[in-house]
Image 1 (cartoon, rainbow, N blue to C red):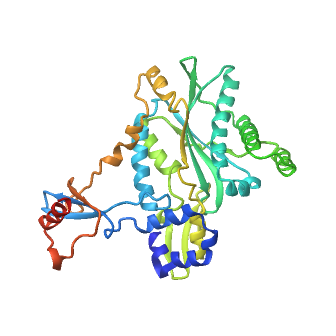
Image 2 (spheres, rainbow, N blue to C red):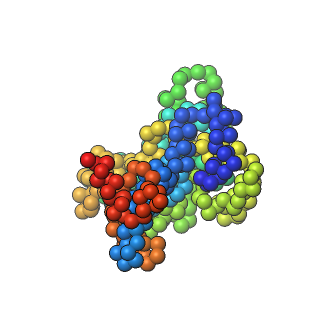
Image 3 (cartoon, rainbow, N blue to C red):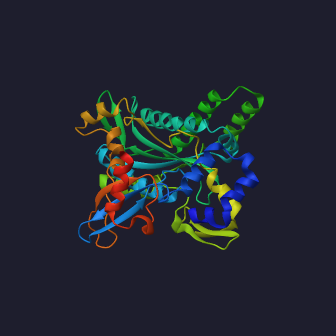
Length: 375
């Protein structure tokens, strides 16, 4: 994907044509992606004792747009989070929003959190009503602003505990009433959106019309294979279905200098081939970049920061802690591309490697640069 932005100076052309319409965060995150793994800015040096070779590895960008970094951090995050989740069955649920409010959510991105908060309200309400007592579930909620064809279609992916806590007791409940969830999701979302928006006749008409048009409630999807029982399966499931970039590099078939070819599969696993001008492709991708500091992944209920330790002790487990979620970021394990052995970390440089004709290619030459710089 990065190559398409760089090819034919596409990104700079796009900025020239549409710069006055771009958000600052779109420019910042895109240009971070373009510098991803650029050894001219910074890089790591590793040594393989088995091959007796040194390797330089560019620094990742962590851009919200980068498909390479997105995949890497998703896999690491999924592995760490799965180990810290409660050892109970979980269920994957998708909550959709009607097309009538997509423009509203696109323009007012602060409403994205309102949408996520509404999901946990819906879950607690449905299970509490079913059990005739207050139930607090544990939920990891991920917002996807994109659809499979890359258009703007905000929806939520939820990984929730099958059951919840009532007065420090675990209550197992594996059945989720689909029809009740649809109407409850509709009610909670519209109620919270109404509270967050200024009162106006236009907004009032919109919300009334949404109740009339969607009498069965809003979209709720419970995948047939969405029940995840073991922690090992949770990591795989999260990486594949819940947290992923808008488009993986593997879905891009080509770029001919004018148009981009890519594909996607719909809910029925039917493949669709797409082709569009490169400027449209760039526009589709960057529109999904969230506002700065916005958390696309949130932990609710029994998984919230205030309650996770308490409920983890009840189940006799560890809780999800920030150090645990960030530990992988400090432990950069890299394997040798030749022999596959784990390599040793040597140093980190914030400038490009020295030219061979000037300094030579031995690692000792690089160390001397670091020493002289430090002095």
